[in-house]
Image (cartoon, rainbow, N blue to C red; front, side, top):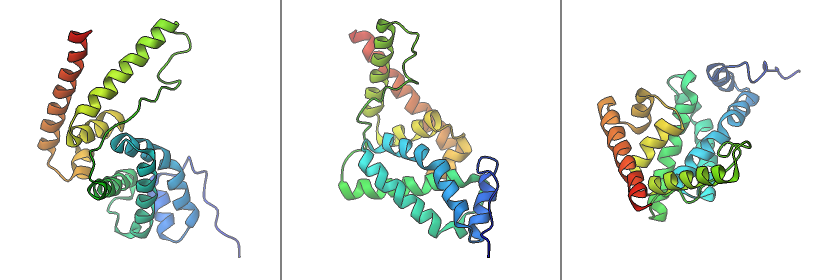
Length: 193
């Protein structure tokens, strides 16, 4: 008997892939994994400050998501649901290791530096990135988490509320406080420099 083949993975929505996976089509879940593993890894790595811990959390999140796929409420929002699982695992890991969440390094890649910039411009861009990363490290974990969800992951306020399990108004006020704190920390660099 022939295994059913799925359509082009780029053309299938998360909802279609989740529905196929729920019907037992393992390829569909593999495509979801391939679609989101790097994005989730980078986000969790930024939250934990450790690529090793992030890798453990991401692997465990995908396993938990696979085992509990039947509990997803809205298949179209698979990544939001997966991200919530990963955040809960991150909290578990942080309690286990009893350490603060920090972003530990600045990653400078082609997206950070423009090949057409002069060396001084590239250096300035790297220094700015380092200042932002350093300031983000100084935020408390709650502020850092909400900023990463909004500014780096691009989640809307409603999705953040669902992921964090808080009210929409709380998202707005926490995000406002986090942005204000980050702005103040960045201003310290201007007064020192």
